[in-house]
Length: 59
Image 1 (spheres, rainbow, N blue to C red):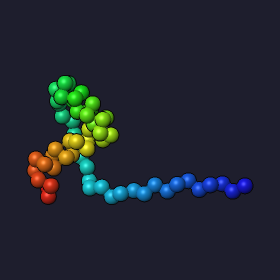
Image 2 (cartoon, rainbow, N blue to C red; image 1 turned 120 degrees about the vertical axis):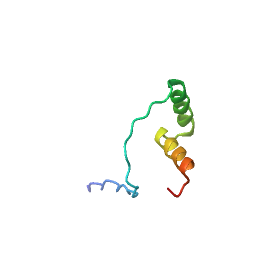
Image 3 (cartoon, rainbow, N blue to C red; image 1 turned 45 degrees about the horizontal axis):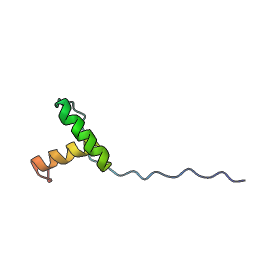
């Protein structure tokens, strides 16, 4: 009997990231979490998109 090889995980190069802490109203955060769960995305994805739209996608 042969052992199966574990699946290789393909990693995608990401730009350097910085971790920051921001304060938001609880109701806003809860609404965002609810919507991200419906859309199967992360809060971090939403925040990154908002930053990109704010400064322009070329930043």
